[in-house]
Length: 47
Image 1 (cartoon, helix red, strand yellow):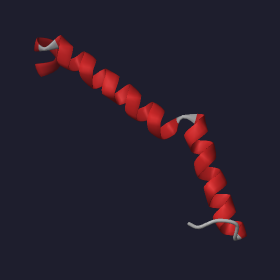
Image 2 (cartoon, helix red, strand yellow):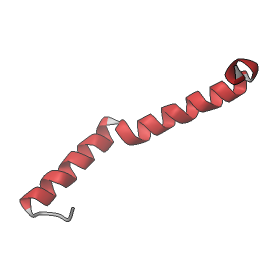
Image 3 (spheres, helix red, strand yellow):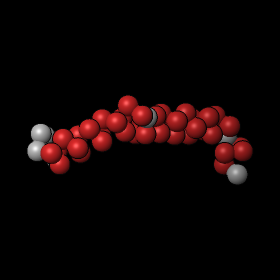
Image 4 (tube, one colour):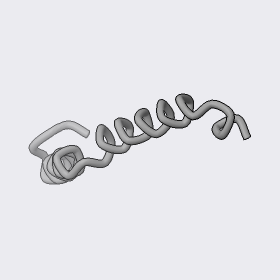
């Protein structure tokens, strides 16, 4: 009900959610994480 009564709150939450997802789950971030883990397994980096 609160989001219906306050549409700008819904817009803010949606924008923040989108930014969080892009920051955590973009392909660039995912590939960096995989590379880091592979390097640590192979002894070429720190975990």
